[in-house]
Length: 215
Length: 215
Image (cartoon, each protein chain N blue to C red):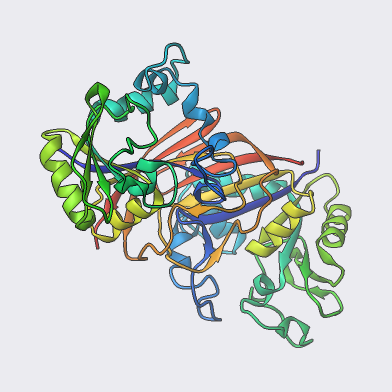
């Protein structure tokens, strides 16, 4: 059955992005180091139009997520790569290049109305101004039998949990301290339940998967 | 070789204790729920003078830690069970009952000098007023060939990392959101390195072990 999933890398100290993100370094200081586990994986490289990479447990996890995903929800900073409102600029094509790695309809949470922005490779950015519930509903309709991926950032994941709409949460715990930045889980209600459903151990990251139990 | 270890349970949202700790609930709201994985384990029960419990991977992990530990370092709140300065009260015997589960010399970080407090079962509380380095040095001398366990709370673990004195860190990630409380890792320097050395997957908790690489 179609699920709403989040799938996000977290440092051991709980950050999904390091301090001081900018266009050069949208994941903040140290953020790229946290994602090294993915950057070398064959399936990550393939989804980004790159050759090579390792075929390993990490690559399998990414491939599994890619093939299950029919539509994506993301926050505006994840679209534009930086804080600010330039997602409203009709010339902006986002941070992800001409052929973004999503290859599916993407629903961007924003306060600024804008026409859909079709990209190469099957990605279309749609701009949703009426909140997370609406974005997930539209993504569900677009995903068909496949899953909706809440790709990030932290605020979008927190909003999906708070709305009771997240079915599954996969956290890739990287053996890294960022020392500051954006906490992945801030202000989650203590009555949101979790059931551990899978652990995949790999040399440089631990993939923890949970079912989210709605309160 | 003798190591300095920390071994501590953390919620998925990064807390080692929930909000509003008091003498009834020294781990804060939800803190006990986070430790359920340990409370049912045979080895945890044995170290607390209780019979029964399950013999499983969790119990083995606890037993491994108990047998490796020669001395313990802890913060004053962990000794007294509550915020405040009643560790200085010579009548106080701490929060742990007459036969504390440590069965080894314990070095309590405090601002108040006090004579050592011998308890039943091999635990002696020693009070250290000159900081984490001194506490770990005294614990090392007492531990002989065995390890020094920095048992908590969060501040003691953070101080040991900041002092460059922690060799190994084991985090028991509980499938729980606490939504508030004490962050286990706050203000850790981003140049403190981690190497993932072991993952033990169990139904209700994930045991992640890291070597701490001093910067």
